[in-house]
Image (cartoon, rainbow, N blue to C red; front, side, top):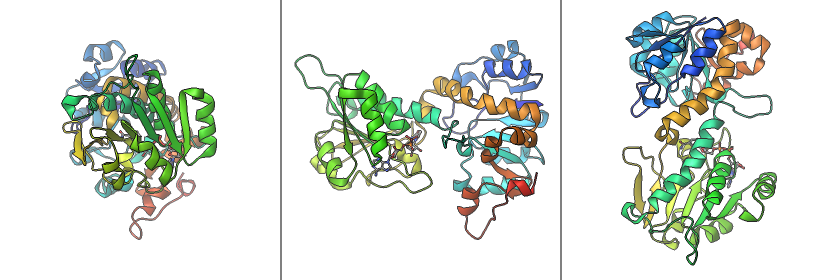
Amino acid sequence: MRVGCVKEIKNNEYRVGLTPDNVRSYVAAGHEVYIQKGAGNGSGFTDEEYQEAGANLLNHAAEVWAASEMMVKVKEPLEEEFKYFREGMILYTYLHLAADRKELDALLKGRMKSVAYETLQERDGSLPLLSPMSQIAGRLSIQEGAKYLEKRFGGEGILLAGVPGTPKANVVILGGGTVGMNACKIAVGMGASVTILDISLPRLEYLDNMFGAGIQTLYSNDSNIEMAVKNADLVIGSVLIPGGSTPKVFKRRYLHEMKPGAVFVDVAVDQGGCGESTRVTTHDDPVYVEEGVVHYCVGNMPGAVPRTSTIALTNATIRYGLQIAEAGLEAACRKNPVILSGINTYAGHVTCRNVAEAFPGEYTYTDLFTLF
Ligand SMILES: NC(=O)c1ccc[n+]([C@@H]2O[C@H](COP(=O)([O-])OP(=O)(O)OC[C@H]3O[C@@H](n4cnc5c(N)ncnc54)[C@H](O)[C@@H]3O)[C@@H](O)[C@H]2O)c1
């Protein structure tokens, strides 16, 4: 198959869909790879590295789109890329179609076969192409939180680990899933005092077994959250109800009870946020202060560390990408039905139930089995 990868054009997006190592894997499997010149620069991969790996380098995005049967990207295509869509072409990337009607219309009109990273689900319910970004956001949340606790950024002016003779910082983590557990790991590693709250008792048991006496676990309810955040220096919001709206567990009324200069990092902001005082921020302007509490609410945190993010993401995407390239999308789905869950549009039909249901009365869901 002819596999392509263009430079991402979304503002502040430095990740790239294929690394030189990925190119090597596709070429070794007998495929041709087309890369736009400069596509990997933001993640620290040079054109020469791609060339050495066996890629064909092309000057313009239009040439790469035209040469490719499957386009591997990171972010959803933007309007200026819609003109490249054509019948039967495979697009393998994050899509977030439920939030983007124009993109959905363009994919349907172009009769594209689109495979979304965020919906591809393994048999055990895990989301293998989403979890690397949650791991990164979780670990980064403590790094960012530690930074904004510094005085010059409006924070309390404390060191997360303290030093002998000074108190350690109190870190409170709301939601102990992938983001929360990764935040916990870094906070414990930095020597902070950590409390983690979740509504899932099996999850709390797992975290308790994993971190032992190094952390405190609490059942997540209003009074436990209020008690914990009163003494917190850093609060991490990492709550998720899959397929549901994020509960606002971090109440506005807590703010005036908290320490001035405490920091709230709402990682869940990309799903609406778990704080009543949460407003989306960007890497260019990441924080604001409300009632003395510094809020960090960046919706695409992994974008801050594009090299790590690119490598982590492509470590996960390469497996299914190679299967699709090897057999073609339809046969790859027959061999590995997990790939079916990633297909959001196919030949002008919406084939992801959640996407169709996001626009009630406008689109209907079509079962892929009626199309293959
Ligand atoms: N901002 C970013 O750049 C970025 C990056 C990656 C992920 N995220 C977001 O981070 C959030 C968490 O993702 P995840 O992968 O850890 O999800 P996850 O499903 O692994 O974990 C969510 C956890 O929240 C718990 N939970 C549900 N309701 C709760 C409540 N009322 N109180 C406490 N805990 C509760 C669940 O039991 C679960 O353990 C999601 O919204 C995700 O989209 C954001």
